Length: 94
Image: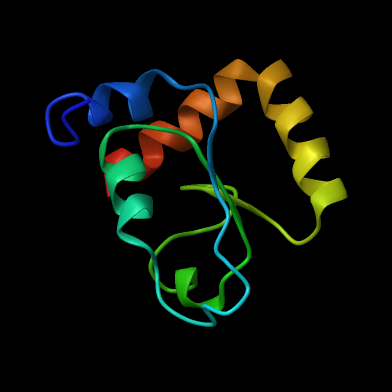
């Protein structure tokens, strides 16, 4: 799949785009985050302090702090499509 031509469509059409930063990466925002948000996709990611100041949790994206919370948020946002779409649209318009 061509990353530049096809992946924006995948990010946009996916109900939830999940970002899991590996444990040894302590700072920074992965390029994939910008790709997902710029494509109008909904992003659920593990907490990273570097997101603060760039994006607003619950407005532009959603983070989780544990696996249990991630699973709860996945269920919640799959059942709250309007809220999920509004968050995705907010990030795209940044």
